[in-house]
Image 1: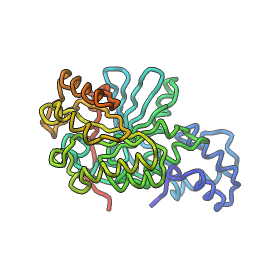
Image 2 (image 1 turned 135 degrees about the vertical axis):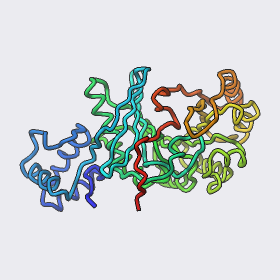
Image 3 (image 1 turned 90 degrees about the horizontal axis):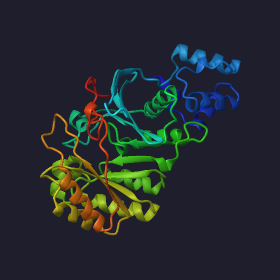
Image 4 (image 1 turned 180 degrees about the vertical axis):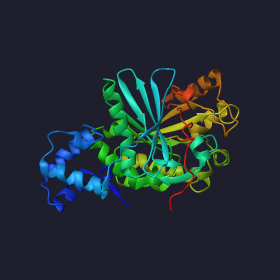
Length: 356
């Protein structure tokens, strides 16, 4: 299988070039071209040193190495003028979705980590489509580079924030995600600070504990959605593998070991988990944790019949959690008209061929 230059960290790229007889300094040039400048075709750069140009031309032509520059299958702007969804086509024809969201003075990209998802959350469009395959580091990085190119073309400032909340469960693809983050945070390239990056999980306990053990500096976001084992199992099948009690224990361990706050996501579903009693149970469950709760009115999908909570219920829920001492935010809904909201990402043209 052909490897991608975008899969490599800076040290790996330098090691490769040296093994091919090039000077270590050429790694800095190529890294700057691929990552900092986000050039889709590095050979367009006029000042490449002849040995580097010759090597690149040869390996790309013969196919021993490739680049992750996925073509755009569809480009869908939201009516709000601030949200843009892209369907990107991978080298094996799998398609994934990436979203750029504009806010005052900044842009955020919502990045996918898998084609499909194995977690099966009942209200999530990606979960409803099932798992196809993991993304490689380069395929994850490629989404960020694509967003950078789009913003630069428009004369906008580059990305400030990343949320790994697109298609897939990031901690189910742990090694590839962390390698991609090493590449994205490298100060010689994209240089997006770890404090500006959020990694979301439905509750993959081993991944949370591993993030704590490795002291990964990214924000951890945990999709909670229910405060009892029975209620959570109905919404999140993965709760059977990693029960709520184990998840909260892992979160307490993460808090204690890293000293970092955890962001808990709660999708508000009318008549399912949006009553004052539910809010009080969250406060009891999270007691003693350094936690921030993000409330997300349900974004409707074809595969789930639930509806979003009304404003009054959301406001009451919000007030109860704040009164209990938890920072709490009702998340702004973005891109709903183009199915770019949380839980709505699904590649309609997705190939159903699963990777071995």
